[in-house]
Image (cartoon, rainbow, N blue to C red; front, top):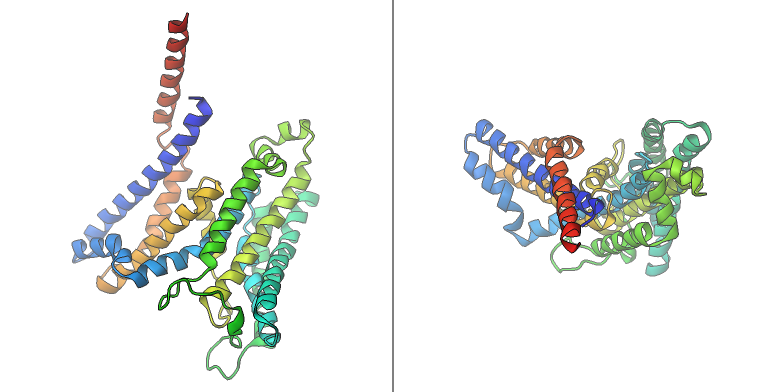
Length: 361
């Protein structure tokens, strides 16, 4: 076994330990703050699996996280720490809804494909600003993308309020999305929709793109060592630009899938949906590996569903899940967490290889 293989397996082990440790500490907190800790813990751990509707809700919640999680994986593989996924997701959903409600007389499949393409183009377009600022002026993409998200929010609010808001609905909502472009439900009676299939296919395609194509190799090389990539003839600037645009396009598609699968109207006015920022957590848990994104998204969706169930049957607030998420990030991001164990694994592996060579002589 090579040192690289050991490090890869260790990262998975470290993430699992971090999740379990965070859950353990969170359960300890519950035992102190709740008057009925046993009931609260059981509701949190087993509640999401007690009903088919709750299992469906887990998958429903994880679907948008898969899109933003995959987008983050591609960005972070190239060391591009852009947060534009939030704005791309929002504007993708917004323009998808606008075109759908203003062209409701179109046939189902052509309209569905068109609005998805519009959402992708919208995500790519808003990603151009922080990408160009990074490439041309070396502006910090974290700052520029976060600021761009606020600009996108106001643009989205303007388009919604003045162009496709249904004033007769009695709420801040758009005109109804045409029924012919709604993503089909997978199980009658549940809200589980075909968006989960699109997300899974996207994760697999993203994995092959990153690990099985020349373009993906260049992205990984730039992320691992920019100087080495330059000496190898790879254009670091073009990789930085392209990855941000790809990430934005995927997040924009996620916005369209979320609207067409889960909602009947566009309802995000004056606020950001939050899926772009949640995608960062998913990407961190997945270790920037698109194949692990569905697992990380499922874990996060499971915890949120469990927190919701616990909030309804006990005295523990739903914000409890934020504590768990914060602890997970702290443990996963901590470079020295289990570092001695990792060093021990590498040393023992080197000793075994040396002993094997000596025995072969």
